Length: 405
Ligand SMILES: [Zn+2]
Image 1 (tube, rainbow, N blue to C red):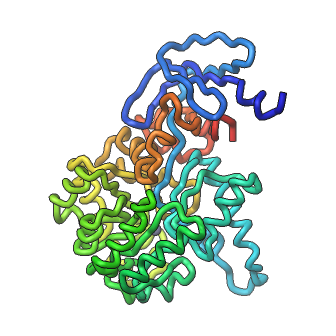
Image 2: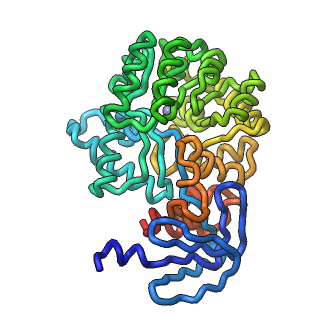
């Protein structure tokens, strides 16, 4: 019998666990039965008898939840993980690939098994995705936009190969097609300027309605999704009106509750990225010009107001760390809870909410028959304190497609 077939026949049963299903449900003293790479059954009852081909792990009150999904990461952004020091040995460009491999591994160990890359330098996310698929590197399931479609703008000078500048509806459509040509899973657009670029005003729309409509039409016709970077209200409104699938940042939305209601009705997801505002306003403020730090302080306050308003309006909210180091992604969930979500709501954002953002509903981010057995076992109760997700000593087991990482 070939090895792959033999492995597929083994059942793994996680018994006697608290199970959080990722969509808001919790079961005590429950079991999760895994067959091959998928969840076969979830149920009450702690007693399972081992038999031929059945491995039982008694979790004695530990917590099983879906592996985390992060809907807003940048797998490669230069000089972030290990900023160069003056006078040190010049770094070979090849280090970037080791850095990528390190990122993949760090995400796995933290139980982040699906990420949506919303822009990387030099197509690095495409490279890591292929390396993981070929088994050359350890890493999560990766969705990537390839390059971000942006108007010709000051940000193009800052972010270089992370962007594809496009002007006019036809060129915007071509830019979207180019991303699919190289293997993009979805399209990311800059609906507004970026808070991290001095020469950009994040308030007005940057791409025009005609440009955005062309991109959304192109993506949706091909069954692909569109994510929109959206800070100021006018650009955010435009992105929502043309039908993008996810709003990234979206901090201004608290100013116009009707837009949140519209998002909820249309199933458009908000990825609040609270952590990025903490980065620019405090955690890494020394790296930014003063004007951007002051702007980020205001934006941080707005992002928290929008988080609560969006939750109350019934908008699906997704985890998007948009920060570093990789593996600390659950800090975003801690911040969501500090900002007013319940711990359960934060966990839903980090599992099924983010899966919805990725277009992977029912594939990952929940525990139900048929979903991928990407699971996280915690020694502790994240409903009582989400910080167990950030403590490597409390991460008891990570299962990727039913196998221990
Ligand atoms: Zn980002």
